[in-house]
Length: 359
Image (cartoon, rainbow, N blue to C red):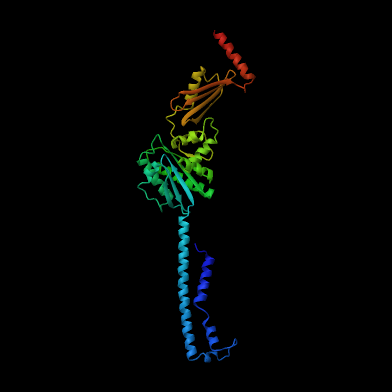
């Protein structure tokens, strides 16, 4: 792109070369002094005056030509600037259901590029030409295609909208606008959808992780945020095996930082927290009135969703891993409770006394 000061330099150079001072040249040829006599016009009579007129005409012609050239250069420069603005990536938007699609947009929020991150994304984009479309319109078109092709259903009702931009404030604004727009669009469908929105910060390491694993930047960011929630069994490798729906459920259940939920991700296929605790208590031969400090968290291990259950009883700490979908007990442990206090011992003595009375 030609800068304004460069345009001015070129114009000045062209003007000086094309239209020199013709009067000075004539004065030199007529042997006039630096301080010409008052009768200059008379000395330029006849052939000299005619030559002066021709020179003046040539000068005006050159100046008109230069003016046209200047206008052309300015137009070309303006066109280059306009093209640069419209083709420059201002933000990147990721849409994830199972199809993952990446949209590059300019500062006017127009789509300048659309790319499928996985094979399902290619199915969605196969019959679409989104270039030049408003990003909100493009996102709704993509979501509509996901609905039509069965990627968004009652049981797979979650969608992730992730925005990465050099301007965080503007990035958050775009994410909110798109999430609201998709939510409003899906209100007219038969699906009660859940939308997870997030702003993704620039990070070379995160980009490498996403590229190496063939996932979107938004998905990589959510995996990072889930790892920060402190799940005891969670690993990056395990989370990579989960579907987008499962990742969003985990983000919802574990209150991942920076995640904004609209609606509720479908969890009907899981037994729930109370049933997970009941399964553990049943295995331990206890009931809820006997235990203290019960905790139940949803986690992920070996690519499967689980509930981690912990509670205390009789100077012992119980830990269980329960399959989230079936309620099967995957693992159980019982250790001495290092945090127990005298009240726990008193409660245990009381429980033992009650047992003796019953006998």
